[in-house]
Image 1 (tube, rainbow, N blue to C red):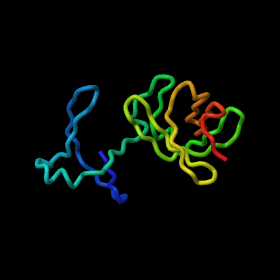
Image 2 (spheres, one colour):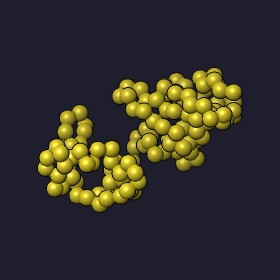
Image 3 (cartoon, helix red, strand yellow):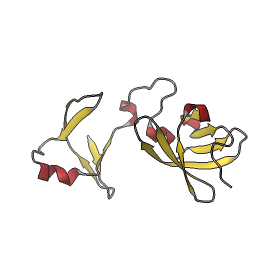
Length: 133
């Protein structure tokens, strides 16, 4: 498995995994046995090739499919680009950088989505749910 560090470094490691609760997976880096050793891996991310990801049901998307997607309203007005995703459990919040460089925090509610097209990196929202000039 490849891990990416907070400064862009890459490290190939072996992960030991087991099932957790609530659909979570618990993992540890092989050879790391103490909390002091584990601190060295804080803020590292697990990199998984997209070819290894399971196919999702209709209407569900991986974060990498949404990040950097262009956002338009259903009238064709450009609203910006998704630059961050915050997963708060029940409602995801997308950070959309507007054409003027402002950040808008958009709670993702299905009623406000017209289309999410990962292949085109395009998201269409109902007009008026985001106000930007």
